[in-house]
Image (tube, rainbow, N blue to C red; front, side, top):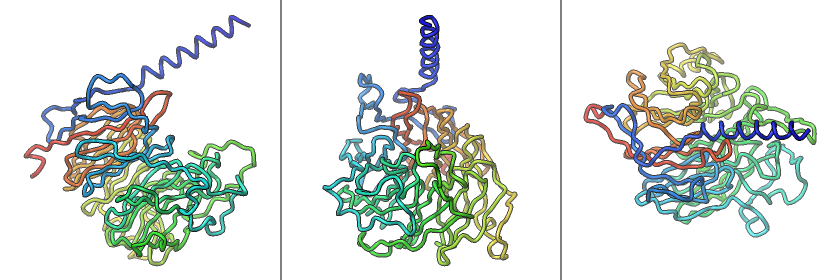
Length: 436
């Protein structure tokens, strides 16, 4: 028996060594390849929680970083915001000198119940807890700005007492002038993506947990006046009728697994990626209903963005970025058809595990985080060719680009013990050719 126990320990130790060996940590000043590319990246700053004994002044040990999921740059205020999923906090940094300005905890107790104007969410029920429903820590996932950067909306994967993410979760609103939370609103289970309409009238919250998307009226300048318009089912709302003591894998038990969410530039539609059923749902904003879906893209899309009249998708498992002409894509609605299969996608392979994508201000380039390959790829949009690639700390997942296109900030989530848990700041250099 003792020999078997020692053999098991040896096996576990070997597995741990293998996992650790696969974790990538790059050095400050790591640059993209090829060296003569029309666009170049270089790592100039990092915040991480895996190495106290750093050798470079630009490599900072930061205990507020704990599985950072997403990042938002607010150029006009010289700041950026990093949301740590497992740390239940948002770290605020100055963009010009990378100083940590504030750490905002997503913790709610008797001292801050004034942040909750309501507890109930439509006809949803709380089954995990029957009192002190607004006493919890929130696990921040994604975020977006509204009111020209005045407010930052942050979704919570779940309330910490709701282990299976079957109860209503929440979204908080941060005043970016004071960097304090000014309101918390309930949501359906497991909200992930969130988006603000170009006309700043509507917020869309997409719920991974039960196939729904919510629209919020934000026309007022006062957060206390923001109000829900409707919770819209995409195909059908899931019941989440799990047994009371079951442990459920909510990353996979998610129906359509709704993820990427973006408003069209004319504010008419919200496009929502159905990651689990390989189509893009189209929601009519004024009618407040799901009017159809677009098929034909590669399987397992994750993120959606619109740039210069084009829709771009990241394809997670197989690692592609795909492009479509937005006007052509939406013609199905004009013809009265409910669904459409679109066949004119252009694709670029960026590395398995493609997660967040962003476009530079010109729309000439798309940057993609390849989570499985610990890589940042740059795609030239004119011909959908990868023109540069740069290593990243293991498990890159979130990113944002500055309004001048010169700074790219990438988060690496915490996985496999001490892997990830870093925020990387890359400087972008464009050649004269790239600016033509």
